[in-house]
Image (cartoon, rainbow, N blue to C red; front, side):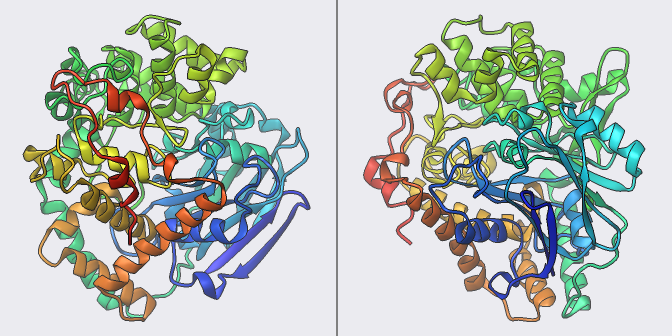
Length: 575
């Protein structure tokens, strides 16, 4: 359990034992706890006082499947509050196999300097001058780094957007094929990495020094049972391998919760052209991969490789949120254009959700017409070029709204909403508004509890039960993000004894008893740390609100508005 501290000001590296205060923690629990303890909440997110921390989940590099999840934490330049952004790929497993619990990046290199941080197979770390890599897009960067350092490394990096310190800049990391197509996208943490002067983190995948287990046999038994449940589940065992997360396009559109044309409508008339079924058919016809292993330790294989008409690679993986943000949200029914936009965002280092919504706001303000895919592509290319308007797009939807003096901007705490309109799924209104992270769907995804087709029992147009559902899910997800289980592998929890298997694995690794109360306490610990930081940063209950458009503009086709009251929102975290 090692902590690597990198001081970008002094160019020094220290390897320490993980402090006792963080023993037994991983992922989001470690990043949020550390940021809350060590970063002045009112500091400049792009200044030297901010800290950027990379932490694999507690289960990363264990025998448990689908646990190569990395949490990246910092004060967000987008929201002004605390941020944890979660990403798959290979880096979390690589760090875990080196026995590294976290990498903490402090200070700030002088402006204009560019550095690489390389972690060797023995876990030692070294800073390497990286001026030759400055301004490179991520795909070319990774190719050059592989030539220089070899293919047996995981690369986590930023593109031009991060170097420009734009608020929607992502941190990209490589998948199993070495493509930088996995994004810690939300919150602008790529800008923090750019402000530090760090272009890339290169981690050896040859490590063999994972943290020891207190009871390896007990862990393996529980992990085997959990994996069996993941494979047996229809969603994770059959639907996701065939369609990926794009399976949600038709389902969410059908219930009128698919935000279209900057959330003026809840259904997109061309949804069938960009659905998971259509995408899978096109990929098969062109010789791409509909089922693809993107992340280390994955048994679901929900990824895909989208190819062009000549069968050449375009992007991986084309997922639901991006299909929505670059599709319905901007009125674009061209799947090839969506794939191109996805690639460009990964290559430039941009969050696809924030960027798509930013384009949608620009179109809504009359800058370009909804459905103009080529205009959308041109806007994203402007970000890489560093034009004045490109910087506005790269700073996200709120910046675009301010530029055009346009008030229809679907952001919460400065971060854009995701692909579920809160007027059609009231529980998502609670999550968007109250999550410490801003408009974040993964923080408390209650879509399943609201839709009958998913087994839900709540009235999705009513406030009843929505606060409780969001609260409980946010607590649960804070714990999931801490142990590092992939969202889609939560199907293993649905089987009889599923959550008990997770408790058993925590106990088997730590050597300490662990049960339901401890799981709840872990999630609460995370949320309390995040909310404490945000309070010190100046957040008040007024920040736990949605934009007026959601309360005042009925959403077709059901013509509903958000009905969760301010008092109910404020009761969400009455722990």
